[in-house]
Image (tube, rainbow, N blue to C red; front, side, top):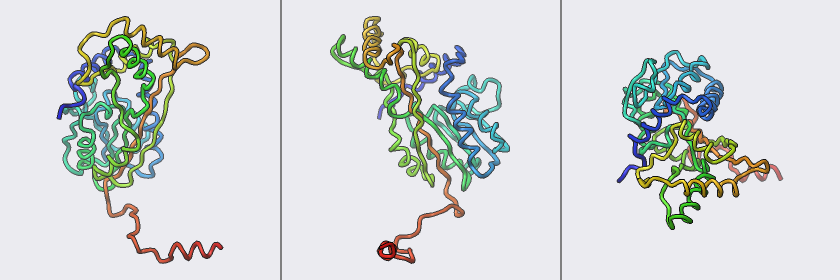
Length: 288
């Protein structure tokens, strides 16, 4: 099966963003890191060894460190450049070749939506986690950049009479719990943080996406250079359909959060069918 994403292009875009070092364009990563810190702070335990997986920046590592929850924190990145002199391990994007049961906390933020084998990534995490170890992760999900997708598709149909994929096909939060269970993680939880950002024009949004390293890396993307006419028309459609009364346009980012635990005997488990001591019928009769 052909890969959905062209991984060398994905990494090239991220490396270019690293060199640009546009602090303003890091708002989404910083928000996710702050949320990671809040979520981890609410967990009523500490961890011996944590690992931040393929996050492209040190924000996730810093968030874990700020909680004081982990005695030791490491990083895995797909290129030495992302480590920026920090200690860490370089592995292929999406690879987690750690010893089984070697960490008790694994985190990954805002990269999983660009992985070709997300189920495989989660399975590797499950193997690396000690019993009762925690995984916390976030990726961009369905609804992200829906306005940009609609505007580009409409403009492309008008101008070329057909379309090519220009915005990622993001996963739905409803599939997230199933992914965690498929990986063998217990007590799965998923939720969505929807962020709406406003821009003066579509071109300002695209500038931020470029600075994030989030431009098109789909394998089936068109190799034909997009024309000025296409982007000009898309910007007009965007402004017509998705602008506020003050003329500024809206861009939606849906951050899907996942958490799951490596199974352990100490964890709560559902009761076996038929093990209840009181029937539901009797409970209902008692309330009449």
